[in-house]
Amino acid sequence: MLKRVHSTFYWTKDMDEAVGFYRDVLGLDLRARYGEDWTEFDIGGSTIALHGSRGMAPPNEGATVVFEVDDLDQAMVQLSSRGVRFEGEVTEVPESGRFVSLRDPAGNLVQIFEPPAGERR
Image 1 (cartoon, helix red, strand yellow):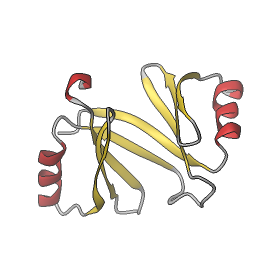
Image 2 (tube, helix red, strand yellow):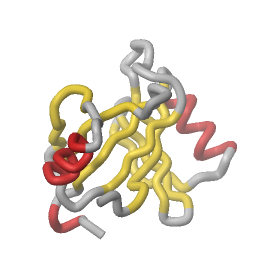
Image 3 (spheres, one colour):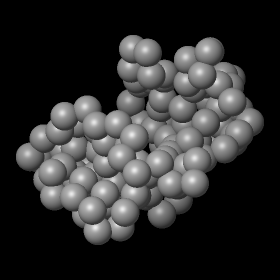
Image 4 (cartoon, one colour):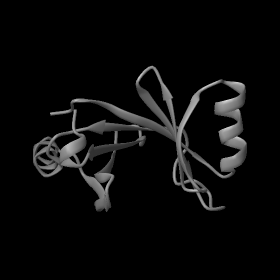
């Protein structure tokens, strides 16, 4: 059901500062930046991303792992049958895909993500 780690992201209050650290200090390759909302870096074919918090406190601490699936609805049915409870509704980002959030037993945020049909691996 879970195919691969699609990305891992950290919440940040200051996108410019965070981008500077990951790009200039750690030397990661900047793949894309969408203003203050989202930035992606490539490292060995994996994605490390930064999620902006628009000046508000980030909703969680630590990283969020995003697992890719072929069929989000089917994955949700399977996970629900195993006792998983989802936070909120499925979110669809035009041209990017669909995702839903859940928490592991320790309270860490996890997401499952279905990319658009033409971008699935």
